[in-house]
Image: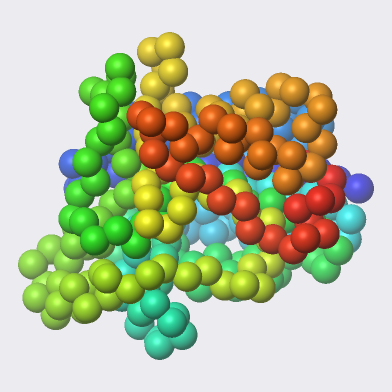
Length: 265
C-alpha cells in the first residue's frame, strides 16, 4: 500500500498586491513531515502552482493510486469565492483555492476539486489540509489581528471584489451573494482539515521570526506527539491552541465518523 502526497504553497500572487509570507514554508514543512513518514511527495510552490499545475499534479496523485493507498493534498495560499454560475450552491457562492495565476481568471473552484477528488480509486484514503480562507465574512479586506509579528500577519483571503476589476455586473453579483452563510458539501469525498470556520480567516503569521500559517504550524507541532493516532485526536490537539486571543480562527474537521476515528496519515 503506497503513501503519496501533494504539497502546495503560494506566497506570490501577481497583480493582487496581496502576497503572503508563510505559505511556501508551510509546503516545505508538510513535505518534510510526510517524507519522514514514508510518503512520496510532489511539491508545487509559487509559479509552479498555477491552476493547470495543481490540477495536473492532482490527476497524477489519483491516477497512480490503488485501493488501500493513503493520499494527502495540502494547500497553503489564498482562498476566496465567486458568485455561483450554475445554481448548484445553496449559498450562491463557489468557494475556491486561489492558484498562482488567479488574476488570469484561473480559478480552482470547489466544484473542480470535488470532481477531481471523485476520481481517486475507491478504497484509497484521501486527506485534504487547507490552510486558506473560504470566508463568508462581509468584508472587502480582512483586518489583521494584533500580534507581536503583526507586520507579517495577514488573512489568507483574497476578496472576490479583486477579481471584478471594474466589472459592475460581477460586483453586483458579489454584493448579492456576500451575506449568504457559506456551506460545504456533506458528501465531500475526503477527510478535510480546514484552517478556519467559514465566517473567519486563516492567518499568515510568524513564529519566532519565521513565517508560517497559524493552522499549519499548530498542526505540525501537535503531530510531534506520538500519541496522536487519529484525525479526531489531531483536531482536538489543534483546538487546544486555536482559536487564541491573537489568532481568532477556529479550525474545522469534516468527514465521516469512521474517517475521523480511523488511522491518521
